[in-house]
Image 1 (cartoon, rainbow, N blue to C red):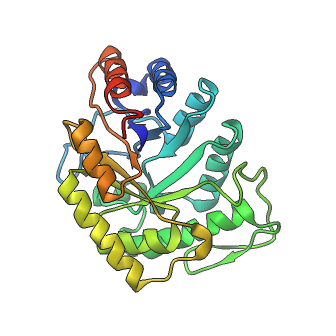
Image 2: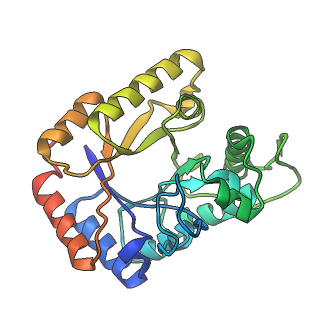
Length: 282
């Protein structure tokens, strides 16, 4: 079982000095990766289904991960997730390629299609057709990252006769992880991604999602170049060795716990506790 640490750009880790120290501690403890969250804006006042209060602090994922990269050597750097339809795909491709380059090839690109309409409205982004737009954006980004002469023609994005160097260190491009708990998200992950990411899922809920992924694999074709679908999950609270083994028995390959710590020391203690009780035990 690989372990990631969620929230390296938010809450107490929105302080960059804290983020650097926590990332270094996680790397030393044997965590495989650290992960960002994302909301560009938050509704004020908070309204369902917004997950965070309006004054929650979140650094931009690419900027946060580039900063963390400069203070670490080997820990992988995951976006968990970037809300893809809110982004210009060519600008985002440049930002994330830059993270992969400055980190020496450590980026994991996690994406989702979003669900907060007030956020889309504030950004002036259409809330409809999020899924098709996101998959076009992803394919366009892959083209920029991997093609000698990048070209893409779609309904939502088209380009040719351009270059965007440097391309990522990882070839043909960084691993892509698609998040979401719906049948559509499962199909997108099977068809377009190296991995799937389930957020805040207990063991039973994870089992249901994995059944959904299995069903999706029977409905859509998975390109052979994507390899086996890697399963990552942010578990619910109370993670211990027995629960970790239950996730592993389901086929989860990476757990990315999220400790909603109020202080740096609380988060560092959580890193140490995870090292002592879980890492290397499954």
